[in-house]
Image (cartoon, rainbow, N blue to C red; front, side):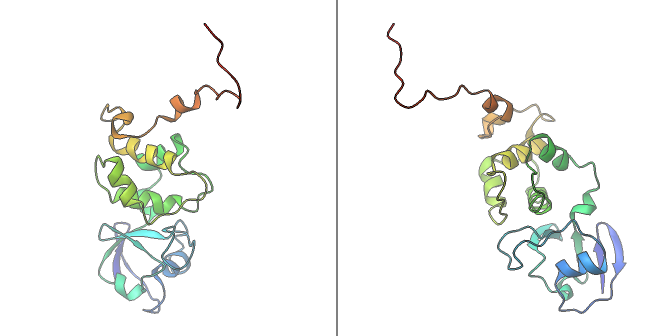
Length: 177
């Protein structure tokens, strides 16, 4: 079957009902796409088909015929989203990261925090708690390059939150003036 994969025309021999995820990983040796749940619930296997994020564990290979498929490898190693994920510690164990980055890529330029949250609703992360991921996407799409204050779109600055004063111990009382 013929398709465009990461910008190059390819002709791949694989069973038409084999999952796209398996064809990418096994036939094409593109192992950046991860399998998390195998049921389309976690988003770890997200790739872009004609620019739209899809769970490749649910897509029969036959459905990819004639389409343009983008995997994490298609971004190369110098994409702003990849750098932002590393800078903001949005990538920890790495299982969800490729799917998160590709879902974020589909959001386009300058998404709001609400758009980021909605766009990533199908991607689960058990490591970061999402704030670092939201910061990374906001930074890559609207942050320093555009000179925007990330707080203005509701994204907390990691470095500012790291310097918070610890809470008083429970039961502690303020000193009287």
